[in-house]
Image 1 (tube, one colour):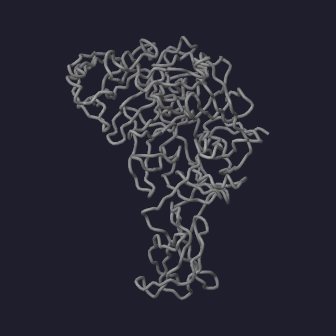
Image 2 (cartoon, one colour):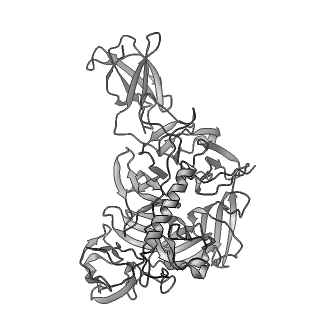
Image 3 (cartoon, rainbow, N blue to C red):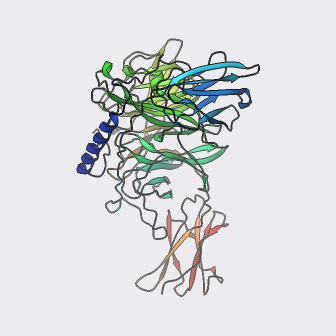
Length: 616
């Protein structure tokens, strides 16, 4: 039977209706500030190059763009800072702009950061000299008219039925939603830990790692109504790190937040934030070998949609990706969907779009380096995957959608997520298939592109015996052994399928929960924080110890130490095999102080808890 679930819509219908009405009022008032009755948001020329003629300089905002934000910086990429000179920036309304030139840590460019914002609707002219001998350059762009939509944050649901939330005596602040494994296999047990971030509840919000049995490995508790998405293992400065997005999620379908990078000892390394006056969205956080991050952001702008059957005074989401220099926080490059794809390419209707609910025409949900200077971009609302030239921003080819470069107009996938390059002319997507329903169920799809014959085809479908229809979110991950991991998005399940189609693994979080993406990775970590210990007396007077070490992956056993004082502890009893996230041990009944040691498989002491007094 096909399983269907509603998209999470917050805590209560009455509260949600009140919030929507308030948003409409705020947006209507803001709409009166738009600078023209029919504002134009599309560029002078569609899919124009961001590289200046006769140079290697890529600039954003791009020449001819009409969607720059007032707080934008001027990104100058592809030339050493020493070869960029005499930069002059002037607005047709605001006049000459002072600012600072800030170089990228990679040494291949710099940003002009204005001292004050530009004005909506004005033309900004940028001029300067590039190279040696100096080559004069000059170009212009237009600042868009931002739509200050009211934020409508989703609410968490921390409560839960018994068994749906984990609780630990030694770590009372760690209360994530439980993960239940319902199908397993030998192959499924050896393919690494499960990386997931559940919302809106039950339990606390935050990124979590579980082992293949469903036992918790690590959890990072976030404040209430702060959600996490896209927890995964990446590499930063050639080392494995944990990355995730965290922030608030709007009823509009995107996030306001930031990206986090943590080491394998769970130390904070860096926070990634969007630039150019935007806030980082939940849909993407991909690290590159160059010390940069590819992130997504949503830019609401007033826009005339009359030609699409909408209102002349409406608004649109210009969904973008930015490349952020992690060390400096500067925007190296920004790619705007409005500049490269026609609004008419969308499968979303424009008639209902308004300043309160902008036209979600593109819905960028992934961007990944694909080799050969290409970036693979997925647009849910155009049913298309785009191969983008990273140096110019030009779309080199499109698969899917209304006017594909390769393949026919018959849909290969619909409302898809998570386009991932698998090799030359080969990529995968998670094919949601709806809504509205286009296919009978959701699945993974592997697509081959053949430029020689201008064709594209699905060469493999990844599914499970019991079909699932995931309306939103989801991902497809190829594992090193050739099997496939599927995160089912708004359906609270994750599955693993062998290369031959046999289902190897399935796990689910509590009913009503969802996750943007889930993954499997091999993970080894030793926390810098110490293990935690709790003691309790039984009714008979026996002393029980409960011990855990959040995030540790190499603990094989625990050993109790006890004594008459905190400074006179001695081992008492044999080592006890680790029993999941929290292990229960017996402590000497008469001990005055107790501690516990974490042991590796060879018996080496990894760390010890603080000694605590035994309860009377």
